[in-house]
Image (cartoon, rainbow, N blue to C red; front, side, top):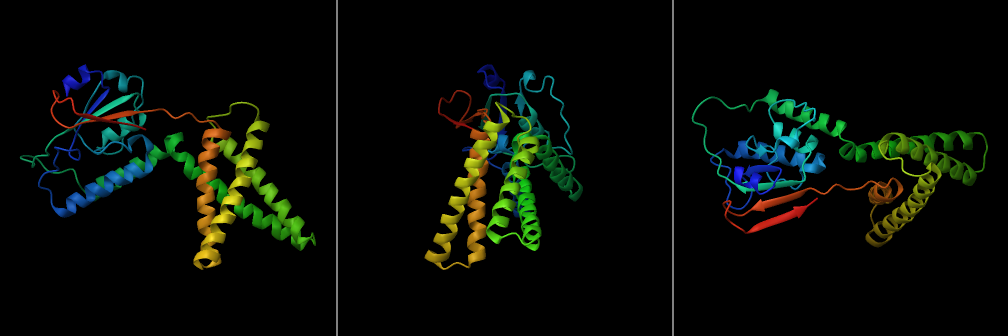
Length: 276
């Protein structure tokens, strides 16, 4: 591990799940708990998706990774805390075989599993990169409710249905933009707000077209119920809206983390590198 730090890697993680590694003689139940825990973290936290063993308790890092970083772990999965909050550019995973315990007792308990879930939720909440999608979905849901409410009020006030629909849709879109600008992408206000608004409107209009095409294909081509077809269309359009708004409207730059997997000992030159 020290030799890899000398090769200018910031963080070294012995992993049970790269080629040459082994997770030992755990029971099937224990392995399933470990599997679910790892993939919960990978699904919720973007910075660890390339790491094969983020719940490991065995790692080595340079001091700069946590210099000035306020770590706030809950429970004993400190590596996840370091991976999400730390300052690093390169990670290397090396294979190792997990050995059976010869002394002491396991930390695995229902209380620690609950602490692990609390820890993941806390990390998502404190990481703008990870909470963005959830905020975007919540804002979108609030826009749907606002649209329905305004539409119903305007129709009740005897406004023509087409005009009520146009007005409620426009007001909901403006509300979504303002909430996303102040909450979802509060850490990125580059350029004039009117430019962001126009980009958001254009992206949303294309999203409506994507939704319409998707639900039409599913309903008319595959005879799917119109409500289910619309829900799938909305989900596809939401993914489009989020990705384009993230990298165009609010111009969020992606920080690249280089993860290298060693396929042998430190003298082995056969390395695989991924960036994300």
